Image (cartoon, rainbow, N blue to C red; front, top):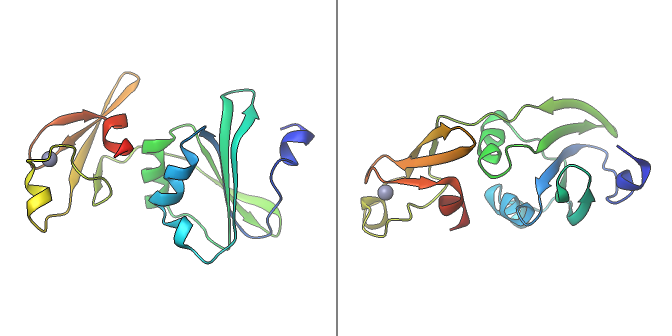
Length: 153
Ligand SMILES: [Zn+2]
């Protein structure tokens, strides 16, 4: 990483840095983890220049450490993001993002006739990976959607 890139967002002492989020996805990740409602200090960098992505978003959350389950949810939005755990200004751990086999209770089913909308049933999608595309299949109505369709809602 070059020096100017490091200076784009202020360093944090303890917490999580999520880097290499595709541009415009950063705010969705914030909502996914309810960070916009957190009382911790969150530093957001949007549309920062990135040699790999063209433009990227960065999130820095102080005093919050993302667990493996959250990392797998993040993988649905930003499979190439890097998650760094920071302690005393140093990266002590990098979380590998792995696609979960299923996601429960995170996304609403795009099918308005799906039972998950009328009943107190938690949404449940199985994750299907096909070549470069990720698809989500609703357990209840059995419809299959592209990742984008489900995560954009
Ligand atoms: Zn459904």
